[in-house]
Image (cartoon, rainbow, N blue to C red; front, side, top):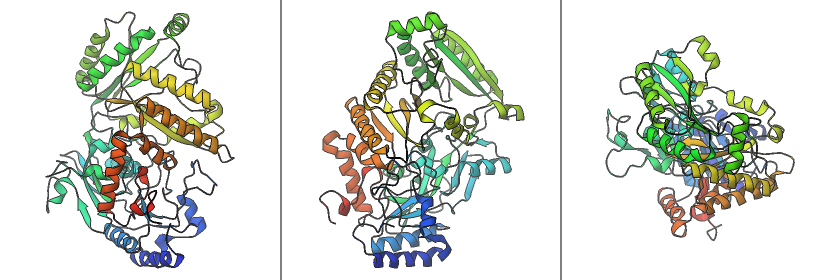
Length: 528
């Protein structure tokens, strides 16, 4: 075990004793076998002296116990690292950013506190998983649908706080965008409620996010400022039907127009499901081929020889059948001027789902959590398959045809130069709210190859930053590097984050180092 920086074993033991008094002896874990649970099993530092490991873990059952643990930690300056369920594989799992921290494991706080059918909202504790929420909705006969990620075993709260997302209706599938109302335990042990929750007896906490004055919800996204104990979410009524379609174009040069019109249609709410962009001709042999997007003449020749589309756009529609079929007809009309354009209705489903539907659908598109994403690793994708896990590289890029081509070419050229194998679709792009994200899974190992991998990823972070592309989420090993790329104004963003940290958590106990924000005594040149 690793004692936190600047702390004696005796002081740490005293603090842990106070935490035992708060939560009960059986819910404090400090033995090696127990702490193995809180390792990052996809760590790029696995088995190395720098691996980020916990010194203990504490699992409170309610907000009062969280307050007691935080107060005990604050009095003794013991670093704590809150997790909801610790399922954040590829982005750090349950391990703290600062070795020696006490993991504050909130998995026992697993109550669905409220589901408001009329207001289409819910209020949950951080230990509520997507499976828990789905089960609650089904057992209660709810009319509501939630948005879920791949995979669905994590926490609603934890996923939202790390800006996770799903596949469903616009305005809900970016999970932090659907948050309305937060209760957090601050570093001094006091409770803060954001928005209308700051009004005693409020009946509109999950209806109006802003409240009065500055909107503080964003202080807790990817932050180290408090322990979220409750979170409200906007949900949406289960639609009558779902329709998926495709618009395919046959020339390299049609990509800009395809993306431009698709953006306009989505921003105008002419379709409301998560869209997709792909290249059928590039993925005909291997969907994760590392070949770069070719020059226009080469791709057009490939299209001519194969008959496959150069590019394809997949809109999705949720709503009454009559409405979404009219929307699909209008969408088609907007692309008819592109020579050789092809249209197809790829799937239509009436809701509620039948047993046959359940066998053929992509469950997250219907708010159904699953673990099917883990089957990807068993499909024989070349060098990806023998790895010991993966980390995610997640750079936000311009939502344009040029953005797709430039990012894919740069990423693939860098990977070839650095000898880095990625699990990465071609073209590697996911549609986020008004942006694209270039997602790539970087395989990790437990046999000594991670040192090269770390160096290569840091070079790619720098290269992307030079093009104006930054990651929106990353594993702990790269949080300082990614925050360092956001350097406008002599790193003003980081300096403001540090000032807020110093004001709200002067002893620096909560999630030290998370997303590159360190407390004063741990910064370079600070106190020991």
